[in-house]
Length: 414
Image (cartoon, rainbow, N blue to C red):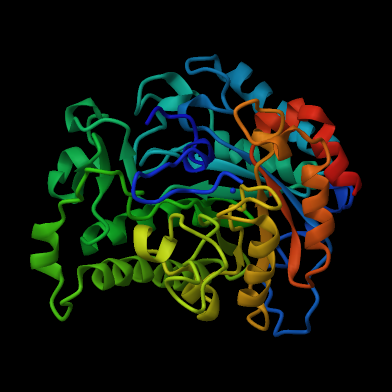
């Protein structure tokens, strides 16, 4: 997979064994009072969501949205970042979700992992400025919240540890890594790995005035036909008490989430913790508690991520399911998924925001619904019927700037 950004990848997943359906407002100055600073406060089920949250993802992986290319001078990178924040204000966003840890590297001077390759083109090279520190200060100056987006386990889009920066954790601890589909991942089953990735992300929570820590949808890697994830040795070492490897893997992911939630609250109780999972937990054909969807990827079974449990246990403060499908999609109908997620969060106090596929609008490779400038506006109108939906988050900044077919404007004004 080329480093094109997580949602471009997720939207394009087609497994030979799993046919994925292709179907998944206030002024920015009010952002501090309408967004996830309040998602960190528990609502014990009064049935009403807060005022509309409107977010914009800014992807740094592969230089998708920022910076426009690696190796720009620090002043130019900073100017690009500030321009994206100005864009968010113009588009009446209340928050930006900036990817600060794209591939086990960092957009701040981290003592745990090297500087991000997307900044200079060389992993570990100091870019001459602090993008995260700048982003926090400049977002807040504009009345925007800054959600720090991290990928927990991805290490590299290749399988050669020698290509990682000198001193990279995987070079010092090769036993921490798994290779799958020609890529490197931290091994979720290794307790030292779990602690390390938590420490790396918690460093940003401690040192910066971020409003939320935000995780994407990658836990165990998405399944690839013909590929097998070889964690046999890890299971032998750490799987005591488990006869079912899938249950053990889910247990590992649950520990990552629950431990991180507790550690954030110990360090900064006001920082919210959110996750943006793939939009299907389980299909009803697999589990009566699942959604009326499928056949499609299921986070519970394929990524070993029990997102429904995380909500019910209140380990997370908000959830942004990636509902990157149109209304009426055969396998993954937006109109069926919204009420399912509304029901999952009901009474838990966990805020629900919906991830929107702005990048699909006007793309000739997408179904006819995405050639309609009103598709996303209909999403907003439909979601308004469900009291626990608190807003929408749009992927991603490049498309927010372009506003294809005027669809974002129509959604904001709906």
